[in-house]
Amino acid sequence: MVTRTLIVMVKVPRPGRVKTRLGAGIGMTAAAWWFRHQAARLLRRVADPRWQVVLAVSPDGEGMAARCWPVSIRRRPQGRGHLGTRMLRQIAGAAPGPVCLVGADIPGLDRSHIARAFDALRGADAVLGPAEDGGYWLIGMRHPALAGRALRAGALDRVRWSTSHALADTVAGLRPLRVRFADHLADVDTPADLGTRTGQAGGGA
Image (tube, rainbow, N blue to C red; front, side, top):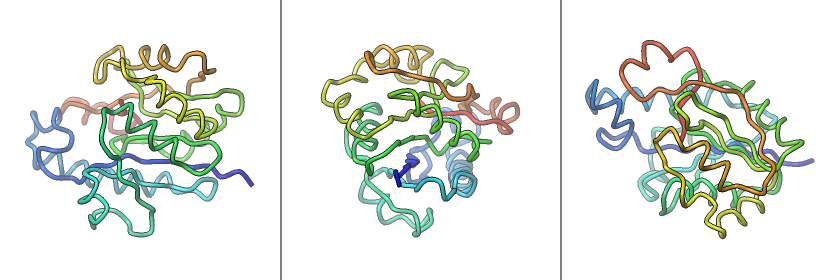
């Protein structure tokens, strides 16, 4: 039976380390509190026997020892590099089979979104979950080896992260892989987003 892997990228929820754009509006302590509880809710919602969940933690040492996440979920350090490098490294290091990766700051995300993303990989090499701001909340590959090749080629080295160009830059960098898209969802970056989008999924790159 082919193994499906869902990787969730998380940071230790220390004030000033996570959701800093949100923290600029509501305070860094409140933003860290929000992220900690949001991550806990997300991990409960995406748990499913159809795939194994793995946490990609940061900072490496502190994240591997942190008590803020369930000890029953396997952890791997994110390591160094920009976001694209860290994401592709995590996918490349997964068990053979389809792999999807998401951030932990995605209100409303549940197993149905993940299942549809895995389904998209049946006819594609890669899948991306577009966000309304031009970024994306999910990236997946049909097999870890594809991510390994993309990593060695520097496929995501020119992505303009945290801008409206992130999704388009990623699609361009992944060529000639066949890319499909998952659900188009919203993200939460600012205090205003908390009031308008916390009932939806979003976030990501």
